[in-house]
Image (cartoon, rainbow over all chains, first blue to last red; front, top):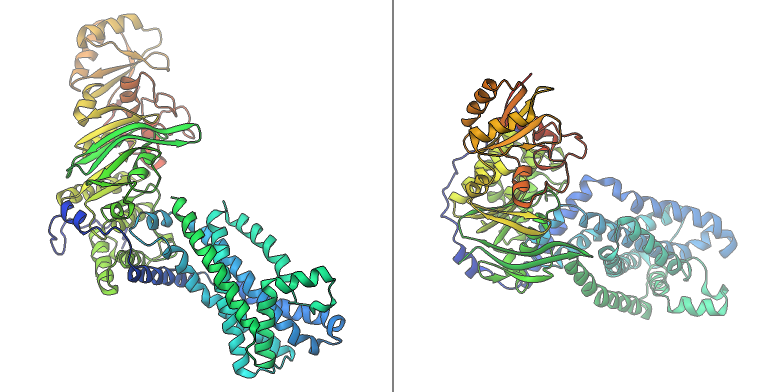
Length: 285
Length: 353
């Protein structure tokens, strides 16, 4: 039984009326409405989720990094920074959460670039669809990634003996904050994905931005121990706000102004990079 | 109102003018063929009309809608099937069609119904749940075309719809294209194959190095090179001058010597006249090694129109006999799978030595 040899049937199930160009021209709308944009974004998110399920190896970094880094950093730096591993964990875990979520953002950019180089994007471009949907769709699906990354980090911390003072609600709040922030900041990497020439270069550029941002923050060490100029930098570094906000939530169960600063940073990133991404995607036609 | 009305289209890539002042008019309901070798600017022209590339200069309208000013409206009037299947490798056939249906505003249920109707129409029902990465080349092309038909667009762009397909799948694709036209669709297709344009197109234009060099019906185009070509290989030591004189006397047509020594090509208005030439040669005692009659290739059309062969290959007049099969991308040698069938498709009857 071979489908390759099956003749396409010449008889249609239901004879449709002939195609009418004039009617099609009259029907053609000049722009995409909000409802259509949402439907199309969700359809693209569905596509991204299907692809995730069929290529589970792309979750490797998301799953592996929190496990490995949490254990590594805890045992290597714990004694030096906080006297012992156990007292380092409340400082470290929120730092690792921030780092993991940011690394996951990078994957958003590289995968978009890879995807855009495929033939199917030619079809998306030729379809009457919103220019935001192909970018926003995968990002909706990526929420799953941020959730996995943040949850796994806390789980690993608990295994190592981390007992968050903020309780279940505090930790849940911290996870939600990390997911929202990761999603917002991912727009910057999506933009890099639309301008870079290859997935490799997206990765290179992203690393160059991410490494200084995560390490020159209060993520792994108390900022007080740094030289004055560096301490000033860590104070304005958005990653520090995310780390501090997460610490306040998970360790003390309190909502501080740091949460506000973190959300504001995310909003600023979206306001700048969403339009830029759509613009470059349009131009790439 | 014409389906496509384009004037003075220009596309530059750096210094290269890939498309240089092309005018096109495609009438509603016809199949229009854009014929040319690789790199002539066929795909670039098509991409500009399909809103996939910006137009550097000139203007184009699809059913009266300006391509540059209202791309979103144009996209609702066209279906585009590219040279390389533009479907998602990781999804199944049914999932692909469902996704494209959803994007074009169908409800989830309507998208599923349309998907299964199209899969059936294209003989892909049994492959519906298979991923595209497991599809054969011909199946991909069919699915790709099916995906272009979801919202029944009145104009369909087909970029080299049969390049790389085996003769059987190629015939199926031709049938499908004819059905589309019966349905009221207008089709603009690009091709490297003269016989494809001949089979399908009502009118064709020939593009060479970004410029239009000819336009008309396939018959008019062919009449410039004859219906078919007689290819002769003279025996070593045969009198070539005498052979030429005999051919001119019988056909009134000057033969063209090909790069291979002792070979002559003559355009035949009617294939039957080949016998007259052979008899006359025999009477003149010019002995020959091999004879074949073939339809003119794109190379010969090009030679007749431009005075040079296709840019990317030697004037390979006999399919499958090009000097190098690696770079033999000219005309009929385009793809391996087609190579083998060339003699079948072109009814080249070769009388071997």
